Image (cartoon, rainbow, N blue to C red):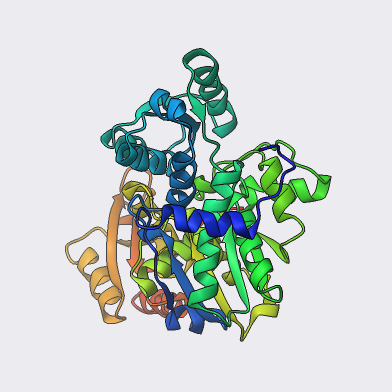
Amino acid sequence: MPVHEEVTIADIEAARARIAGGVLRTACIEAPSLSQITGCQVYAKLEYQQRTGSFKERGARNALLQLSPEARRCGVTAASAGNHALALAWHGRDLGIPVTVVMPRVAPLVKQARCRELGARVEIHGANIAEAKELAEKFVTEQGLAYVHGFNDAAIIAGAGTVGLEILEEVPDADAVIVPVGGAGLLAGVAIAVKERRPAMRVVGVEPRRAASFAEALREGSPRRIVMDPTLADGLAVPEVGARAFALARGRIDRLVTVDEDLISLAILRLVEMQHGVVEGAGASPLAALLSGELPELRGKKVVLLLCGGNIDPLVLARVIEHSLAVDGRLVQFSATISDRPGGLAELAATVASTGASVQDIRHERIFGGSDVSRVRVSCVVEVRDARHADELQEALRGKGIRVHERVRPQMQG
């Protein structure tokens, strides 16, 4: 299909019939806790509950089912940071189609390992999707593999659009849907479905500020390759949006929001605590958009958050949660000088406990702590309820004659 050719609502309906039984219809549930903190009536579309953890299965299966017999025999290839690769690996195995995926070096290790477990041939190449694609294209010319583009193929966009049909059926009176934007295939598919069936419903795209390729395309009038910085939303780290996807989406969306890393991190924490769901950075970005304060027009409205994926590295998740607790004012770090005599540390701990706070970590600094050998500087990490509780703790320590030198606040990330 040429780049300029449309993907229609009929294509999306056909895709839904084609993939039925092979891809889960995920729940779209009301989220009262998220509603309370955002001022909207929030619903969450749980695409991270797909078998491979993301919406990518919809497009992957739709594309694979439309291959010619010869292409099925030879196999397919794609460049992907993880979710598209996982989807192709799963459905390729199910359909008996060989799959080779090229993943950039930054692809999460958990996604690389899972692709191999599913039987895909995995090659690691390049610093980003664009560089990985260069090797995948060699496989097309040298090995005769069919290339399945992760966000710009018509079949991929149509498959992604099926999630839009489900949202319209599950929350028929929704005022808006917030959609993560990487290569813009999901945004294009959802926007086509929504604007065809309910033109008044708002479609809002969200992308990380560190990888804002759709925003750049809007500024320039067509896709442009950008220089990206590392982002928690690795699934959205695409240096250039798809030409077809951009053409289909640009006239159908109502807003585009870019979000900082701390908001993405905080959104992951909120979803863990309030929805009991483990969602990756890309999947958490719609909630980050609501938390950003940049969508005041949605206050009081019925809003669907498309939680597109849940494949986050467990080690990254642990770091994100700790950082988010610090950003949220619930983990504080401070240094203090205490007596190095017996009972000095006990008095510090007792004072912390008396305020209802909890010590998470404590370290002594004797070598560089000063010339008074009767006293020692300690660095503490303490869990508190909020910033006000941290202030109460600091006052309690001063009341006991414990000198607090500094309270470290987390570095805000753009």
